[in-house]
Image (cartoon, rainbow, N blue to C red; front, side, top):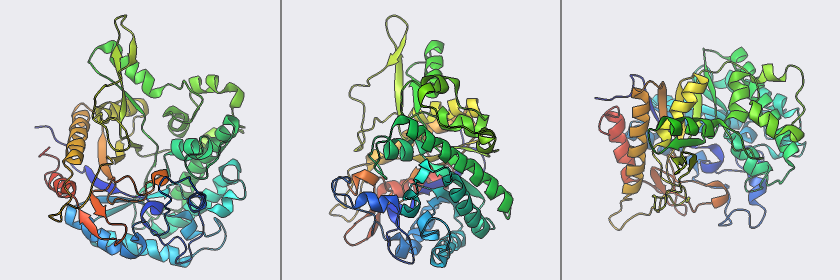
Length: 450
């Protein structure tokens, strides 16, 4: 029988801005997402994260739900402006105490906290000083990482620096779809990207220097996957190449971020394509960015299919009629086989799927339950592919479903529900969905019942 390896981590995830609320409570400072939400028309339903899931006050209830599900690990993010309201300088002790309670609450229930340092809630006070365009941002972030590591590394072993730089840079600074809502020139976008990578490297240095135990550290970029629709070797090679190539003037690639972090250099095709837009890269920058990492984390939801045309050329398969989530993303479970396989082959680090899941049309039925068989089928199909990758030699270390709760889904507001647990945003009542009970049983079986 195919199995996940001993010690495989079954988890779920969320981020600070999407669930905490209390945007002005307990000393928290303003973030660029608060700023973005205040501008009319930028969030589709006109909402914001001021209350969200009220996790700030209801965290114990949410931890209890995770405990009942048998979750091994919870990937949470720390809100930078909740720790440093001005981004740097004076520390907000109430913020540290809040995360202290969460970490201890998780551990008391046998749930391992995995901390993401930056999940997009950049302090507005630092944005006003240039944000990621300011080279000092790398030092600001490293100082923040140092404090959080000093405070929590006695109990927290697994850490991520940046979540999805493709999104907070591409959507936030290039297309203006996300906070801070900028449409910068591509040259400036690449400069901000370089500074974010420097921030990653300096943060890893600070974390290792201040750790109170040996840490497992990674980043959590988007996993952009191309996959073959047959086992033709030509198609497999084309899918591998497409997963790692850079062919567009945008932020959406794997290698522009992962290669500097892990291999120590920007990819040659990106350097050639971006030649006239390249950022200032100072002597020693690449050595700072290229810090030893312990895992390759990737957020993978869907993939791009390739097929061979009648000339034997690899071309996009439009997948007419394929299943789609309410985010209008194709349901392509093969992405969780080929994505981890290709990433492991290139980078040689254990793979952790830090996000995978689907948005669905969920509501509480008249019987008081939330039936979501589509989500169960989605996760099952993806986990079967991930398990096959593991059995084919990929070192797959863990899987984190996104998300534990329905929450604030960025520019979509509260219109998209990814959670294993339904949240009534008027009453804040939590209702575990059928997928939550199914996931509990999968975890209890070690994945055997898939």
